[in-house]
Every structure is written in C-alpha cells, then in structure tokens.
Amino acid sequence: MSNGSGRKRKIAGGLIYHAARGVLLAVRAPSVVIAAGGVSSLYFPNTDTMRGNTGDGYAVALRAGADLVDMEQIQFLPFCLASPPAYEGLCAGEPVMASYLGVLRDKNGKIILDSVFIRTRAECASAILRAVEDGRGSPNGGAYLDMTANKELPLSGPYFQRFGETCLPSSYNNARQALGKKAAKFEEPWEVRPGAHYHMGGIRADANGASAGGAGDGDAEYGIAGLFTAGGAMGGVFGANRLGSTSLTEGAVFGGRSGAAAAGHARQVKGQVKSRIGDDAFQPLIDRVNRRFGQKGTVAAATLKLELQKEAWKYIGPVRTAEKLDRMDTVIAEATARLDEVAIPDYGMWNQAFIEFEELRNLLDCARAVAVAARERDGSLGGHVRFDRKTISAFSKPYSTVVRLNDDGWQVARLERERTPAKRLISYKLQDTKRKIQLRWLRMLPRDVKDRKLLARYQAIMGKGAVEEVKAPEMAIGGTEAAIGESTRA
Image (cartoon, rainbow, N blue to C red; front, top):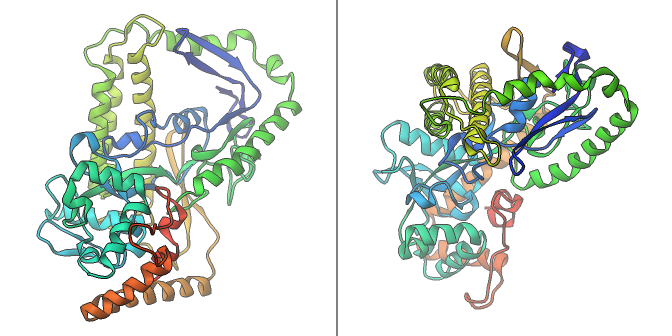
C-alpha cells in the first residue's frame, strides 16, 4: 500500500492474507522489501519452476505505482522435457551437455542448429520454436537434441557417456527416467522443448534496491519512497540474457544492500507513517478484499488460470509476433472481465480458491506488462524473440523498456542504456566466430582423427583414469560453468 502520487508517493504498509489463521493482517511500515520474483508459472506446464511463481511481487509493486523494467525479457531453458506429462517442463540439460558434436534436429531429421554447446539458451530455444512454427516440430511441440555422434566414437564415446551422466546429474536423471534406457545411453535423440526458467525483468531500482524512476539508471527520488527490492523481484541487473547461477550472487548482494537501505530509511522516517496514516486508512482496502470472500460465481479461478497459461505460451512465450501480441491483449481483456464471475467460498482458513484468485489477478497484470514491453521492443534481443522483426544488432544503441500503470492506464517508454565499447563487441564477435569455425572443422575431420582429438579433450577435463572412475566437473542447472567453462572451449 502506498499513498500520494508521482514523486511524492510513499510506502505506508501492506495487507497480508494469513492463510493458516484465516485473517487479513494490516501492517503499517515505513519500508517494504519485495523479494518474491519470477513469473514462470504463467507458462505452466512449460516451466521448471514452482507453481507459486506467479509474479506476485511484480504485480503488487506495479499496482502501487512502481516502474517495471525489461518485462519482455524472459529466459527459457531450451532443453526441458516434452513428455510424459508428469515430467513436462523438467530440465533435461544445458547447451554444454550436447558436447562437441551435439546438434538440434527437426522432425524430419534436418539439422536446425549446430555447435549447440557454445550457443546461448536463447539461440537454442529460438531454433526449436522456429521449427515448431514452420510445422517441423516434434510430436509434443519441440525438437530433437541429438548427441548420438558423441557416443558413437570408440575411444571418446565412453568418456562422453560419463560426461553426460555427471556434468548435470539431476538433469540427466530426469531424462533417464522420462525417456528410457536408449536415451540414457545417448543412443537416440531426446525430444525437448523450451521451458520458462527466469525473468530478467522486474521492479526498477537503484544500486541500493530502492524503487527508482526518471532518466538513465534511475533515481530513488522519482520512485516510491520506502519501497525496496532484491533478488528475482529486482529488474535490470541482467539485461537481455542472464548468465547462469548469477541470481544467487544477486540475491546475496542486493539482499544485503536493500535490507540495509530499508532499515536506514525506516529509522530516518520513524514515526512519520503513523502520524500520516491513521488506523482507518487500511479499511477501504480491507473491505475490498473481504468482499471477495463468499463471492458467487460460475467459474473457478484455477480454470481461468490454466486457460491463461495455455494462451500465454502461444502468444507471449518464446515466440512473439505483432499478431500474437494482439491476440494476447484479447485473452487478457476477456479473462479480466471474468474476475467477478469467479466463485470463492466464504471462509478464511486456507481458502485455496481465494489464493488462486489472487494469483490469477497477479498473472493477468504480469501478462499485460510482458505484452506491453514486448510490443515496444520491435526486434529480437536476448530472451525476447520476434519472428516478424529482425534481430537487433549488438552495435545498435541499447535500451530498456519501462512499464508503469497509472490513472491514464498502461504506459511504456524506452530507457537508453550505456553503449558497450565497439572494440569489445568486435572482439567478442571474432571469438564467437572463431569457436564456431573450429567446431565445424572438428566435425569434418576423419573419424579416427576426430576421435583421438576428442579423447584428449575429455581427458583434459575429466582426468585420464578408467572411464568408470573419471567424472566431469559437476555443474548446477543454469550454472556459470554450464554456460561457459573449460568443457565448452572448442
């Protein structure tokens, strides 16, 4: 809850639904830290995240008047399981797992992406969905990760098998259980499709986690006084394409900064909130929420949520076009119009229907924010892929999208960012091109020469002992090593 408007808007506290006690708690507070990030459940079942990942932090901040930044930038893991239903969305590996010879194929066996293990998540996800959009996708809406060429080589093949088993053990076990013995032995391709994993966007904040507004990197003077954010709820830290595992560091760094800044702000304005906000100030909000309990209706919030998730995957998922965004606007408008038709029982304790209703409301606001930002960024960049527009050049002037909701409705603007030096960009492009050429050259070598070269590389990474004894450096899903490490250097 906040009061005031524009640059004078200040935090007054919040309203909490205590499910175990079945009551609403009004909490007066001069500082509030929002650290509940993520909105990947918008794409269920195409996600590897928990079901409660429903964008609550973003929606609460948005309705309070905070700016949201980079909301179109959602990171999709490219290699999630597409079947059976109980395993849908679980991660089956990272690009590095494809190793030196792994490729992506469409349903016809045609290679749609080579050099997979040095590609970004966004590149892999985009290649899969392009095939699906063209009618060349696998039966369950994905493509095939073919790693069989690694396994077929007599000398290096056993090392690759061990590498696949141990570099990302949890992902490998998911695939082994879901796809069977032949897949576990890398003797047949794996059917995979992208799944929502992380949101690079979120609440706009300064370096201390304070709600920010204005030009450039933003200033707390133009944000909501007393509102702070950290972790996945904070936007703008990773730009358009986050490197794996860095969110753990982000949580530690900005959690400490935001906590300290929030405490300092609370001490500074001590007593002002109580004098400014009386006990009855929360009553209108409490009454509004209380009216939902016992609401008569003909539809369950859970049903509307499932419908929204299905449409969000089609229209604002890994593949976007102007037509898809227009259709999503219609989906959101129709679902929002039905909120008053949702049936909610009249009891307080563990009212799951009420929880589902609030999650639906938050998902709708987040879906709108994603769609608005996606329309503003009229080209492909990072986790945002527009099939009807060109890829935005790394040499173009970078910008972030900023979305806000005020009395005039939904607003979006472009926020210019500092340009990366051209020398650094050129160096990166040259290195990237060199690695891809080296990989293609490796694949063209005679079989025995290629086998010996790969054996030497695996042994350099894993050791020269018996295959049963060697082990790849273990990597977490999304880990930095899984994106760029010794094992990915061609």
